[in-house]
Structure formats: structure tokens, C-alpha cells
Image 1 (cartoon, rainbow, N blue to C red):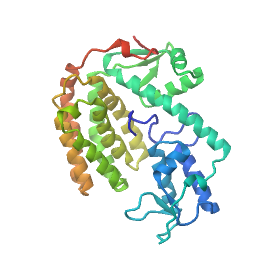
Image 2 (cartoon, rainbow, N blue to C red):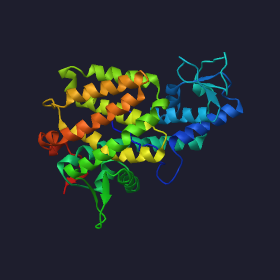
Image 3 (cartoon, rainbow, N blue to C red):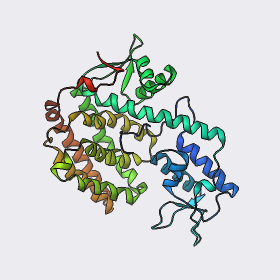
Image 4 (cartoon, rainbow, N blue to C red):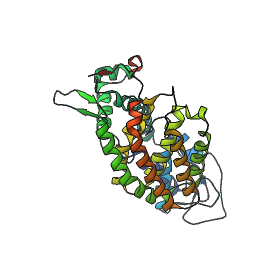
Length: 342
């Protein structure tokens, strides 16, 4: 989920209007094709093939494949990427084009196109709104939001409702939408919640993690150890997403995942506001802590990883006042037209 914090989708949330989650739709289509024999036993379903065929992100694809595994429709083989059709290990493995075996029903294909399009817009709005929270209070003009993205006011309202569910905006008594400010007291409260909840979530997530994800995250942390790399705010943001979102939010408790996401989002996305004109003094220490946590996980030391994560969050909370004091001024020219300082 690179780019924005959530890739345009809050974990576990159903789409607007109470429709099924994306991973449920994809999982059901694949399950139907397995049960009908269109996907034969031994066929290898790879994650990238699922994302390409359905036009979805990595997380819904992974979740859909996990659902198939939980239902006993597929299994995994050590050192093989993806899942294999069939309830039990077999020497048979068939590689092929997933699209040659899976036909998307027209109504499902249409729904996926619409929902993916909305998700792309949502990811942009989420990032833009969260990145300005440290600079004060902003009114979000829904009509201008709709015009900016070339969508109807109904879709703009849906986007605002999704932002409201994750705690980024609120509709006040005058029926107008507002975001911010993200105050020092609010930041402290969010960190307190994360300190309490992220280590247990990491313990839950550990057995569900793909070792390849840990290795890739660790490689990015190592890439960020030079001063030049640490000046790249996009890379630093990705490191935060790697650990706190892609790994910690793999926990099995849906309520815990939803609560943590709401606590993480304003803080992690707001990091993009700090700019890259000079390195923050706590960044090298943050990289060291991330490296330690991922190294512990990669070597199976889950309790050590959880303790290191708690220590990292406490340090981040303690360092936050200094980071806020060095916050560069808001560049109003970079504000999206639908955001007005209030």
C-alpha cells in the first residue's frame, strides 16, 4: 500500500451503502470458479495475477486468498509464491494465465470499475486532508470537491462520510464539513492509544505475516540509512506504512484493526507536512528502531519485536513537541481548492 496511508481504503470497512468488501467479492468469484472446476486442482493463483485481473490493490488480493485458504479451497507450499487450488498438498502445480480460467460476471466487473475509481479519488482526498491537519482548521467545500475531481455531489458526500468514519473530518451544526486542527493534546492522546494497542496487535499479526513482506520492509529501512535517503519524505512515509499499517494491521481482531487505523492515520499521514529542508533529529533513531523491530520479526522473536515497538512509540510521542516546534509554515499555494483555512 504505497503512496497514501490506506491506499484509499480503511481496513475492514465495507464500501459505501453497506455493499460487500472488495476482498469478499474477489474471494467469492475465485471460490465459485474453483468449485465449478474452472480453476482446476493444482492451479497456482499468484497475488499479482489477482490484482491485475480484478484491478485491485495488494491487500484485498491477499485477504481474498486468505479467505480461500480458510475455506479449504487452496493450500500453500513452502517456497512457492501464491496459493495452489485444492484442499491438500499435492505434487501437481499448474502455471497459467488466471484470466484464461476466470470470467468476471458483467455486474461484478462493472461494480469493481466504479469502486476502484472511487477508491483512487478517496486516496488522494485522504492524503490531502490529513497532510494539512497540523496547520489548523479547514473547511472542506463539497461542491468544489466534486468539481475538482469531476464527480457528482453524491460521490463527494460519500467521500466525506468515509473521511468522517476514520476521524479526519466532521460535519458541524451548520452542515459544513471541517478538518483539524490536530492539536498537541490530541496527538498525545492518539499516541497513548497506539502505545496500548499496537504491541498486542503486532503479536496477533506475527503468525499471519508473509516473510517476504518483512524482508522487503527491512530492505527499505536499510536504504534509508544515508542522510540523502532520509531527506526523502516519501520514503520515510513508506517506512511508517510498512511497519504500522502493512504489518501491525494484519492483526486478526477487526475491532482492534479499525481502532488502530483511526489512531494512526492522522499521525502517519501528517508526517508528510514536515518537509525535507532539514533532517529532523529523531529520524535516524526512528530508522534504527524500525530496523530492530523488523529484524526481530524476521528472526521469529515476536516478544522482542513487540517490546521494541512499544519503546519506539514512546520515543516518538516524547519527540513530537520538538518536531511540531520545527514545523515549516503552510504553503497555501499547495492547498487543494476545496480546502479553505477556517
